[in-house]
Length: 324
Image (cartoon, rainbow, N blue to C red; front, top):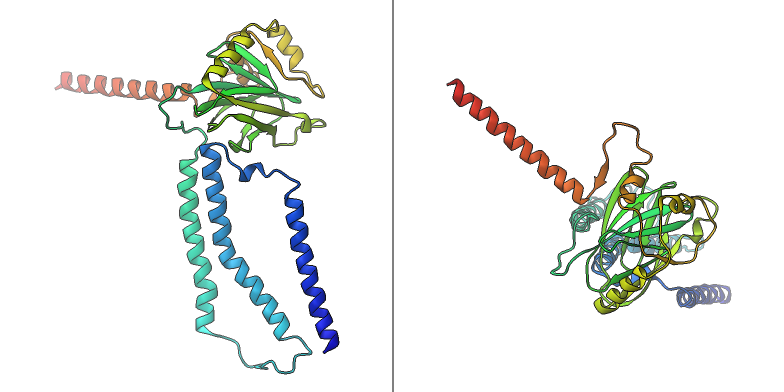
């Protein structure tokens, strides 16, 4: 009995130490994904929590039962029932097949609902004007263009709080992944494509942004700060950027696009008109169509196609009447 008690005490002590270590380590890191500062990140956190709870309904009982079975039917326990002929139970089969199936169905329904609700290209509902920022992934830095203001930044963003922001993303380098953990999930930036991502910061602050994809030797340097400010401070920042002596020309962009180990955050008062579109189409072969997922151009193209279809239909109807 003495040895058994010592074994139980050691096992309990080990479990307590493991829990304490996890708690201490949790204080050493800032889990930004679990601290949402925008509507998209908040809904994504809800989906993660729901998923963990549903999975725990299966995983936790399985782990507990596994431990109970191993402990109860250990070789030294002579009191455990020995039933070599037992092989089947309709009740148990129904439980360990039925519950997981129901949970998977529920999880599938919830995931589909959230997937459509959190579509990156879907504009956020707001009565405030949307801010557009065009993002170019370079080796190893981020270039941000503000087409409505005519300014640009390198490795830093400033956005107004409580206003939806539309990011249009492409790459002039290997495929990368754009991620601001406290505001929303990541999305890929790819050459020859323009992807859309809608985010919003619900409160002022400085948020961490990064590249979440391996793109070479110095990919870890591809970080940037996202400054969410009041509307008044945002206007002041725009004025400050427009007063910057730095500008982007076609020649300076070619130099900027070359791989560099690190770049300091920089403001630019101007950039060539249409440079984002030229970057998107830079690696496309002749005759290929520009793919702009969730872009305004995509919507306009659909509208034009619909109008052309309607015109053709009316023309066909008119010809038919004339024939009669």
